[in-house]
Image 1 (cartoon, rainbow, N blue to C red):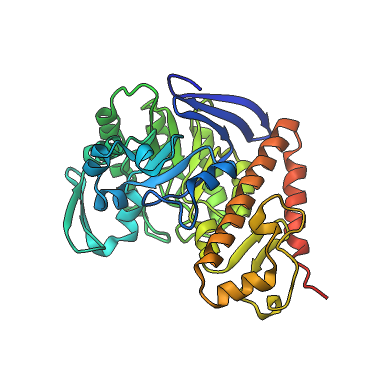
Image 2: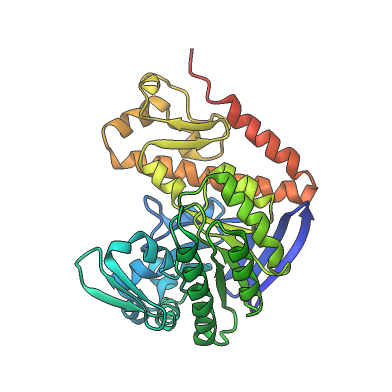
Length: 377
């Protein structure tokens, strides 16, 4: 651990990077996958389980925690770490994604920020760049994200350009509001949609602010994977080598493999938890849809070689029954399986980079998915 925020680049294999973020609440091994705990909980999981699976850090959401239980209340209760019983690092996103996803409920003004109507009760809330940082401070977040505007793709250049410039201006305001907080960090967020020169403009502008880390935002919002990867190849060379790089809201296991190969260090996504609640399991043999009737009398586990009890000890027949009966245990077991798979994937990625065999690891992993999940005879 470190008394301050420090990123150490330990090895590279091509553009893939093995590193370590050290800060007062713990060490984050990178590449890292951060389970999403939107409202102070990783859905269907105990946080002790999340830690045991290998997570060094989780993500919380500024917008949702602002609405309930409220940032000031969380602060009065001792901060988010104490409230949810997670003494390890927490990253909070700034609410910028909700600026996009709740477009029908908000208004944006570059100077004043964003005015939201709560999706819960219609109450009106205001979030400026300064207020976003204040909320994240009240929550006690270790890594705080700047407020930005994310544009859903496809979009026209004028809309993307306007949001890019506004996000850059907001990054500067967030940096000033964040000030100097020993042991903590504020990351800027690269925007620019799918337009190469705007991505470069955003990345260079943020690099000039000399922040402790940088995120790539505005991807995995409707564009094909190839476009996302192209934007990474354009963006990442413009960011400082000795600072962590975080790809927000991504993604599938294949997205992660290919993004690590381009130089990304951190990921978050609701996919493993959301898929688990809808009956979909991620395994080394690819995805398994437990809703399918072919599992109804299959006594095999999802993976007999797994060390995860949810993966190894429960038959597909039972999981299928739980899913079809809409039992809560279905989501619990499949989320457990999925987060285990994601953390095992990250562990394998880190080991492969350390050994200088990342391309081989990618090929082996993709080959396992391609072979598929062979039905029982």
